[in-house]
Length: 266
Image (tube, helix red, strand yellow):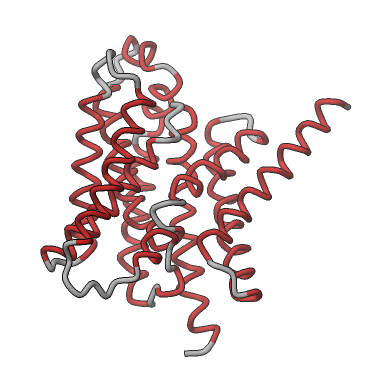
């Protein structure tokens, strides 16, 4: 397989994932739930372990565990006595540890766990792209359909509820969509770096955008540029791809921060 045949499925899959991560990451940043992505991504490793243990397709275990975790978090977040950061930390570390324990029970394990932890985008085949494209179109369609309510409830659930917006249902919808995106993003940056792909582009766009729509679009564009830059750097200098994408995004955040700070002093 030549470089072009290896490059284009990885680029297409990475761009599709970044496109969807943009608006979802923006909603997480507005809700101050950036760490929520960590909880779901760490739970994804538990899904991997259960899939290996039960000898079922990996995506079934990952989606099942992520959706279960999303529903559990949605229920627990209704309880005011539980601080969200404490709850997310407990669930993230527990699910990651449990996932590693489950994989230790798999006899003759021949799966590269590093690919799940840090991504293996170059292993993406052309046949993987149609389901990814359909999933991305479906998620983006749902986001566009419920965008007004999602934005309003992200800014203030109390005010949104007064306006008649079903905030609890939208919160659960957001968690379910995030669980689906986490499943796809595992291929791009791995379970340990998924949150970076969600949060860093949104943080960059937040410094430059003036409306929620501009921020969502800007986050998608930033993520796509980070994927393309990280992929090119990985192929050029033989770098680990997932970390290269995250570093590219972090570099863009640093540039955006310096640029906005300079404008503020002028």
